[in-house]
Length: 463
Ligand SMILES: *Cc1c(COP(=O)(O)O)cnc(C)c1O
Image (cartoon, rainbow, N blue to C red; front, side, top):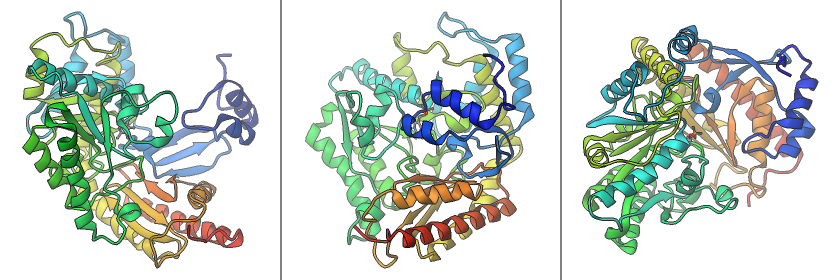
């Protein structure tokens, strides 16, 4: 069975997939009926499937392939590292060059005094580290009652028991006994869906002040940290009003609450700076990193922490770690990815070329009859599909328009994702203006076809 190749007929691959492979976040029985799309290779921003379709990947995989597909340098580095030292741990008072170099590089790129990295295999693992680390931090400082971590509804912080608890996805909390104790959720700064008649800035301030309310209700002596994505990703690329983050920072400062910026999507250039906290003007004590750290070429994540947090945690033994913390092959691949990002000026390309161009084209989608608003920060954007452009009322049948639109995107060789009735993009950072034109024209075609289908099926009704 080790000879399964792309050369098998698609139907045969799909049948084996359906028989043995359980897909994440998928109704597997339904997928088995339909057959999974088989992706065979990729280059630049383009995926190829087993039927020979060439698909523009406007999601960069799952928000991660920031430098694009097919960079041989990363493959070469991985092969070299596998031959030299494929694995060694960092538990036994031991270390190795790739993890040393990567930690030093991340410390150099990270803002302020975020100078120390605890490595993990993924973003979920890194956020599990953060839960234990902030609680242990306060215990070490003689305040063991400070154990509550405040997060937000509709946040995404991963899928493990801990990180899934931090997240605010109701569908996840409904399965498997989440959340764990001492995680508290406040409302999100999602003006479009929840702002009612309020002015967006006023609403942003109100939602930030929920943090202060929660701290006062729970008691300052109970609260350890606040965690948030600078821009919510999986929740639907929710761009907070400008008033939101400064108020959150003020509240964290006032009550000395640790601020954790989950930079798993925003980090490494996506918002037009190295980190989303720089774009939003905040000073986290801890950053969660993964995804763009290796552009998805190897699984790796981590917690980047301040001098203060590192000193407190490091004073004794922190009983925590993963077999693959600082895996040498993943670390070498991530380091090579960061070299490419830096030497090729990819973050500058985002800020000066790709993001301004994409912003203009993306925001112009708001003139489409199906699009209520178009939001974008750097290279992450969303559009709200609406039954009626003149109001912000949602569809009567929530999620169907988004699903149809995503199917029409695929049919037009474009990957966009839908979150309910929001369509979202997060293309590779290396995308060129000419490729952005292709992305937008396929998106418009998909929107037109979606609109026609909604009309035909009489689904253009507000709820
Ligand atoms: C994807 C994601 C995670 C989880 O990362 P995994 O590598 O999938 O475990 C955590 N936080 C954010 C903001 C993410 O987008």
